[in-house]
Image (cartoon, rainbow, N blue to C red; front, side, top):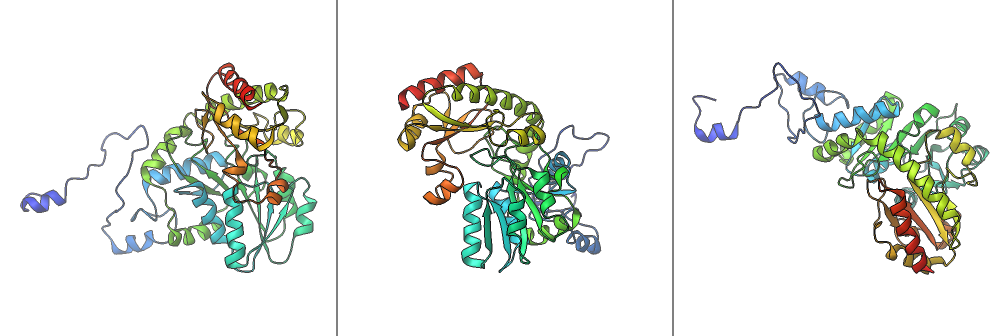
Length: 393
């Protein structure tokens, strides 16, 4: 910039690209604008999710690194990272549905997803048929000419219901119905795309980032056509991921397999201890032999049943609230999948949008407590759980 005035030079500092070496890790590209030498090249950049970068809402190098990494982990052809898990779910549903369409969804869903379906039903006239998710015949009975989506969760929140993904995707094979699966509870443990799923969504806030310091989401696509279709609406909706949040998530991916393996082992340990406690009437964890989908979990999740369990306290809602307030080492908080353990009472928090009938249909009781197990020593966690159970009566 020699020859220009100081004010001009201040506006245009040199942009350094590595020469003779390359970054060992993913750099943070915080800037949102990219310049071109050719008008035609800029025009081409507008044509798809994997074209050249030009504006942060349409694509960013750090965000794309996360998208490619998770797409490879899930066995997809492409992905779109978002600012939250609900951002990923909303982008997919709003892109793939229109007024008058019909959706088949399992009854046990994350509360935010349930609320979104309710909103789409009220404002757009999207009809939703809820099924228990135990028998693929339920899907065939619910199918209509207007059915566009089958929406499932690999491990349901918070009941830990496990869906037989190969059987359920087979139920819509040969139709125009796309299958969307929330795999937030089972990263690295299950790859839904391998079982015929078209779109996989995650709250990257949870296990993928894994440290409780970022909010994000991602949608992974089994085929490029669906990826392109959702991307066009994604640009208009604008739920784009922040580069720094994407960088934190990429960092978390490196330890995710080890974290999930440890959390699965610890959760199985804690689940067994809870099942033997007199204050607990039932434990929901697919790793236990008395879980209704234990055999499905053994096939679908051979390397572990995840880091979340739920249990029913004999004292009902009052006992659930008392237990949640009595823990000391375990945090009382709304998330899951981080290095630190967390507890919450779903009926009054994550699933507050659901009325009593909907809660009962989803298998969520007044005294249901959800535990997300972190990386603490299981003996320390059990000591905290045991004293909280005593205080809860």
